[in-house]
Length: 221
Image (cartoon, rainbow, N blue to C red):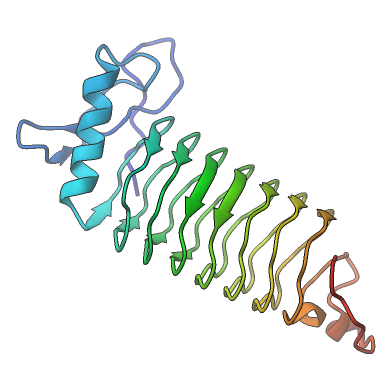
């Protein structure tokens, strides 16, 4: 996991961004958060360069950074912090993320098809025109997300959570949503056709299968 170093500014409670040495190797040194770094441009470029040059990335802290038009195809992230980041115009396939944190991040006009993201948190994220089609997204946290005109089609969302989420014009067709929680989730023009909705949980009584309820036609939820 990423180091929990605090920003060098004594009164700041934010975590330090990752610090790199002269050869652009990641260190465990304490540095500044994005708000207090003396040279934001240089700090961002160091992070972009590190991601570009490494296929396997462990423990990177990029909280608050903007990623625009960057290729993350086949990159593998483990235990990284992307909280409050902004992702725009990403065109990536085969991205892998495990035990990462994307809480409060914003995704706009992103294509992340065929991704593998497991045990990862997207709490309170905003997805706009974002495509996760054909992805493995097992046991992820989507609590409180807002999704607009986005797609999770043909994805495995087993045992994930969409508690308190707000989904608008968003598709979850042909998905595995067994044990997936949609408690207090508001949906507008959301399609779950061909998904195993009977095994998902939409209220605190449990899934329809658990309750022994006969199958019903559930097109839009």
